[in-house]
Amino acid sequence: MRVAFIHTKGGVGKTTSALMVATAAAAEGKKVTVFDADPQGSATRWAEVAEQRGEQLPFAVTFVTAEQISALPRQEDALQIIDTPPGNAESIQSAIDTADLIVIPSGASPMDLDRVWPTLDTVTGRPAGVLLTGVLMHTKFYTEARQLLEDQGVPTFYNAIPQREEIKASFGMAPTRLHGYDDVYREIVEIEEM
Image (tube, rainbow, N blue to C red; front, side, top):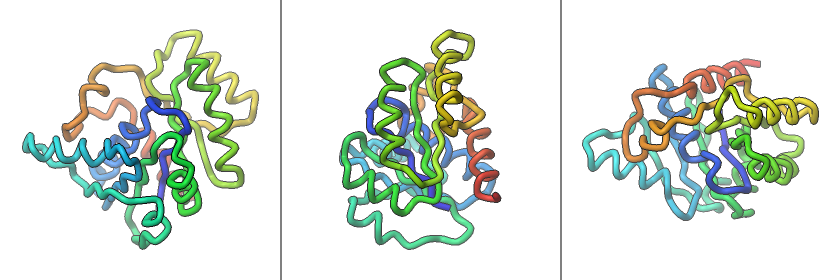
């Protein structure tokens, strides 16, 4: 299965979500590859820093260009994850065109949600779901965000990722606590099995 993490806005947790889901999949014995399509190379840098610290990630991270995404060979019985940049239409479109599932990470703030709609417009007709990330679970923002997405018929992941400093501090490490990303991975598996 190939899963692309896409959002036209930056800072919503695409890279973190991609690597945490990859870690959850690897922990369950799944063969995983992460393709870093962001010219900033955040996923690639995360893997490099982890390796320098002696904490190699349990999967490969490979930098790819927009042109290379379309030519990526599929791997049976493996999870391929594409981490995309914000605002780079060519990379985003290439990832959309080849993905089996599109995950749209988003915060629950009005500014983050405002950019969900243009992102959804780019994935029309493709299996996609919004994953709420960095949320305070018992707040008005979270409740209203869930309600808004539900009222608009937007597919969302049942699980949401809480706001945790430990998640932000996990850059450059092989994560050991997944803060709900393991449950998100299980949702992805359920979608794959449908």
